[in-house]
Length: 389
Image 1 (cartoon, helix red, strand yellow):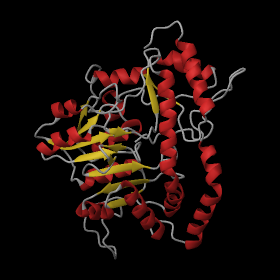
Image 2 (cartoon, helix red, strand yellow):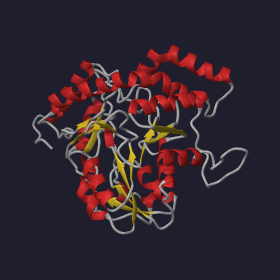
Image 3 (cartoon, helix red, strand yellow):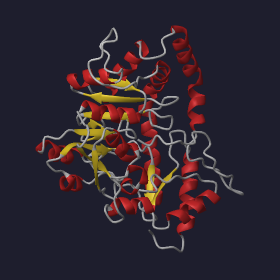
Image 4 (cartoon, helix red, strand yellow):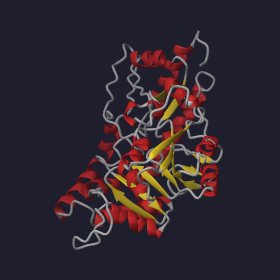
């Protein structure tokens, strides 16, 4: 889900002596452009006196469903809650087994455990960072009750193969599409190819709110009805509760912010693709760059390279005024917080290699070409005299 505490301003990048400063992420460049529209939208909510759910939430749910070409969108409090409610809607409970990728944000694996389920970690393809369908096939058993797929970094997992494997076993596939709003696989939007799709609108996302917010999308009428009940403690009205749910409602203020940003997201995603192409052209052969499938149209929530001397490169870039991040320094099967499901080193070697070698470079729609070129120059400067890794 990638909802960790993230610097959303300048990013803390030190100024380079005699060089350019390139922040890892600068939300201010975007919010300054949208400030007047956001201010009006938020004051409209204040004047309405309806701060939780309500007409503005209904409207943004319809608009997001239309944007993703799916029948239903259900607003919830966060991306992590979107995943939790999806698992609840699928009937996941104590003792059930859920397959999850070994390389993703923590909540991809922690939410099944919150419901008393067990997790089985599937390794990834280190070249794409996406869960390996052959690993899903290897992990699926008669005890498996769901497969969670994370569309990492704004690209898509191979849903065609994964769905074929899961469908053969009668197992639902839940898409963690928190980082992939607008990405496509085989022409279909991320989040619309399984039982349900889960989105986070944390402020650093491609489509962002101004705080925590999330959404679940589905093409199934019955699933949508169940999700709408689950987010309000199962209340059908008049304090009559028919199922055991949670309190996870989308705030109207967050919905209003999303409604302002949604018309821009296609333009923003196109700019991210252009930046990624520029990086790829300048860095190919210098470091390992992302290699999307021909079936996919990524939206590059992150542009993540791989190199064996990752930490040294990150230090060199920091000294040159370039912000970077590591997503993620420890794969899920080695996370202490997931005990007793924690595994051992060597269980998922591709995920472990990714954790040792991955480095996210600056990418956001307002990043300037000159800044991208400076990052490329600094990476090339570091690489001179060193073998490509």
